[in-house]
Every structure is written in structure tokens, then in C-alpha cells.
Length: 75
Image (cartoon, rainbow, N blue to C red; front, side, top):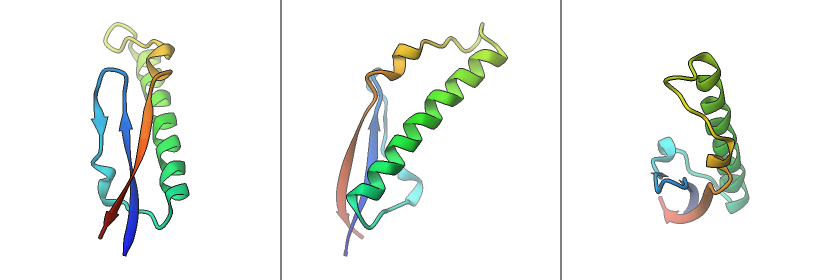
């Protein structure tokens, strides 16, 4: 049975491909999950920066070039 998951590619070449064991039945579901994960990463970085800007620098443009790809796999 074919399933899908998302890989998230950040501008610093960091890639999240773990997917936490989550697989989706459709590409659309995987795409929604990727968009949500990117949003959460951006919000988390902003929150860390607000709590301690010296330790957690934040530049909103760091998240302008975040991309994702949907991967099809057999589970």
C-alpha cells in the first residue's frame, strides 16, 4: 500500500525527514502536514527569540526559503 510523508528542507541545508512515524494516505495530507510543520518551526523560533533574544537569534527571512517535498513509499 502506497503512503506519503513530507521532508522539510531548510535554507541552511538542514533536512527533517524523520516524520515521527507518520504516514499519510494522500499527497495532499502530507503537504498539509509539511506546511503546518514549517509554520510551527517558525512560530517556535520566534517564541524562543522573545524569551531570550541573546541565545536565540531570529530572522524571519530564515524561513522564506524553507521548502518541502512529498515522498511516496511502500509501507
